[in-house]
Amino acid sequence: MSAHDHLKRRAVSGAKWIGLATVATSVLQFLQVAVLTRFLSPADFGLMAMAMFVYGIVQAFNDMGISNAVIQRQDNTDDRLSSLFWLEVAAGLGLFLLTVASAPLAAWFYHEPSLIGVMLWISLIFLLTPPGQLYSVLLQRDLRFRRLAVIETSASFVSLVVTVAAACLGLGVMALVVGQIVYFGLRSAQFVASGWPAWRPELHFSAADVRGYLGFGLCQMGERTVTYLSINVINLIIGRYLGAAVLGQYSVAYQMIVYPVLRLNNVIAQVSFPILARFQDVNETLQQGYLHLSRAISFTIFPITAAAFVAAPVLVPLLLGPGWSDTVIIFQVLCSVAAFRALGSTTVPTYLAKGRADLGFIWNFLVAAVNGVVFFLAAGYGIVVLTLSFAATSLLQFAVMQTITGRMIGLPWSRYLGAMARNMAKSVAVGLMVYGAGAFGHAAGMGDVVLVATMAVVAINTYAGSALLFNREYLRELWDLVAPAVRREKTGYVLAPPKKDI
Image 1 (tube, one colour):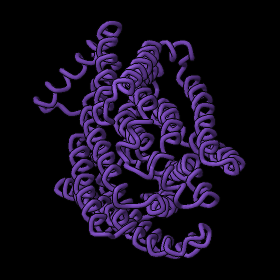
Image 2: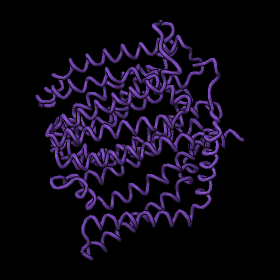
Image 3: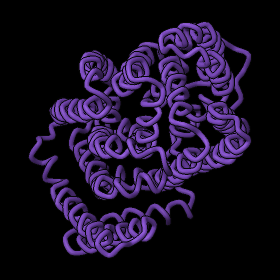
Image 4: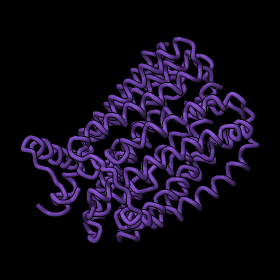
């Protein structure tokens, strides 16, 4: 089997499980938002978004950036992993104290005194996640994506049940807080339970053990911080200048369309990075893997965002209920952001596989600075203009980063766009057909539920028909990849590192 085929088959095997988990958790996220908007106000969601913005910045420091270093390096030992484990536990305690100390400052910045209590509870997450963090990395490194998928889905489901129950009891914004604590706590406990039989940390710590990881890790930590800021600085601007209620409208729309795509990005990174890292010196293989990922993204995400954009005037009010009509236009603009973010997801594992963590840091630092200035200037014109500016900067940033990564692995724009041309055309056809179905449904006096169902059926049939008509070769390729992956799992074949490495 060629290196290219081997890469694709391992990627599909992992993507199948993590992809199923992402679909499941995205559906659960949709259900949670649809239910909670009946019990919570936009201001409740906005308050939670303020707290999670601070949490997100601090969380970037949670594992000192060493997770990807463990995957990238091939010389992990018991002593080194034990030192890394205790480093993460100590970092979690420090970040817990930092979040507690920063709560009054955040409340002052946003002019929201009630934010203090929310952040104090959110800070508990930093005590819950470190024990399972290294175990999750080892599962990812060893390509145990099925177990990762089960953990992610089960934690999301339990969190959904707890959050909805708390909202029904009238806990308000604290329902969202409790749900997050349950999610991260259960997730961490399952990671520990999965990895404990195979490896247990010793009471050992040595600075020499972690020194080799921190060079790569510090770049990763810096990149995560500036990446988070580049995407979420808009939350800071909205909360500060437009208020909690407007931030709540934006946050809900973001969770409905962009958040699932960012979850997809995590899937791509989890599955492709440990595989691409094995072929980091073979540009031809990296090109093939990169194109395959890009085609898969455009095959799945483009028609979804196109249909969601057209159906938004009916879909969003139906899901969220009365009082959320202002979210429609925000949701539609964020559909384009979701598409650009999805396309850009292939660049990160590629330059990390090449050992260029520094590139991600430098680039995202520039993006965060530009976004901060643009969003600050746009805030005075309202949420719609601010969201449009987000879409514009997302397009520009994707184009630049795609150019840089393409040159790194020798992939020209013409070949990249050619790989996705048919999927782009089919997605436009889906949008047009959904628009036609909506116009017909309105003229026929259909109710919202029937109308959305009709649009969904039209979208699925249009895309499936055009895929069968124009993409039979690609569909056959996907099936050929999936079928051997299933057979391999039945025979127990695993691509693993040398036995003496941990």
